[in-house]
Amino acid sequence: MPRSERGRLTALYGSLLLLAGGGLVALVNVLLRNGLYASISGAITTTVAPPGTAALLREGVEVQAVPAERLPPGTAPSPEQLERFRITQNLTAAAEEAALHDLLLVSLVALALFAVLSIWLAWWMAGRVLRPVGVITETARRLSGANLHERIALRAPPGELKRLADTFDGMLDRMEHLVSAQRRFAANAAHELRTPLAVQRSAAEIGLAGDPPPEKVARIRTKLIATAEASEHLVESLLLLAVSEEGLSPAATDEVDLAAVVAAELAARPAEETRTVTVERTLAPLPVTGDRLLLGHLVRNLVANAVRHNHPGGRVTLTTTTTTATGADGLLTVSNTGAVIDPSEVPSLMEPFRRRAERRHTPGEGAGLGLSIVASIARAHGAELSAEANPAPHGGLTVRVRFGR
Image 1: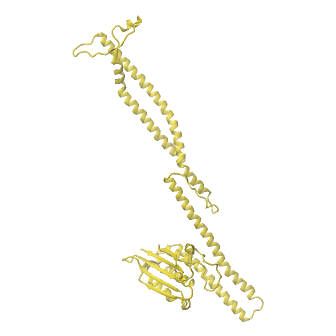
Image 2 (image 1 turned 135 degrees about the vertical axis):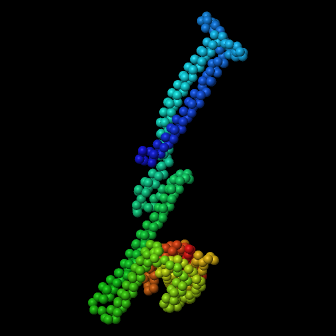
Image 3 (image 1 turned 180 degrees about the vertical axis):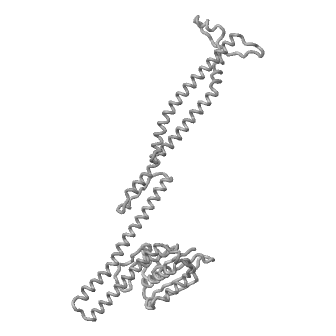
């Protein structure tokens, strides 16, 4: 058995072609064998030579054949007629045997040539059919992290292999996007973690150098504590993002009223955070199946994002509604006023460490992980997350999380 797919296809195609050719040769020989004797016999006995033909031929006289005649019923054939009938039978049998022999010989020779041609055609055809597979294999073997931008871009008519190549290209697109996102995430995480460490080191080396007064030591201490808290918050956010990407644990999954979760998160927020904005809520019971802790983080990040990126005197609106009569589907909506956002920037806000402006490391500034954590928790719960920029003059963002069971 051939070890390559091309060899197997060649053997299959060649065998089928040989089987078809052999069947055709056998069918022709069988049909001719059954009807050839009658055809030759009819052709020979249609015209017969008259009596005394042999003597006339020896004398050089031209002899014209005459049509064979049927004997009247009840008439016995003469000895000369019987002799001619015997000669006709012998000629018919000899002609039949010679014709069948020549036909069989020619058929076998033609079949041998056909076999060589069919195997060559099968080998060529298998190569043409498997060429896209070879291209896919070579591309997959050549790919690495440095050349994920390469694509097969197969030029072929629509078919299974064309769809396979296009699917492979689509997979490469997703892989390239994921690898780029991971590289960007690692670089941003390293930068975010390096900055507070540099601040702490500078404060320790410069601020505490020599014999600083107690007031300066107290300021440096406060600065170090605030920097450590920011670093701790960043690490916790990264851990939460990793946990939500792993999916839900069956042991932690339960029936949760999302409206109650929203109310609890709003009540737990410090009053000074929402003092400059107006919080409006319309909370209808919204039962969902999920992890209560992760859902709490989802609501907390949405509220924190809506408050942080608002402006004094702005508004934050939270709504929970059921979208079906049975309550099987539900919608959480968080909308806030704020700066006017370009709609093209909205999808990038869901990526880790993506901000609309450069980070200034001011108090209360986030690390750019809020919406990416929300997106990850929503995926873990099988929910659909969407966001859209609010038009001017109010601006801001509206985020919707649609749950289904």
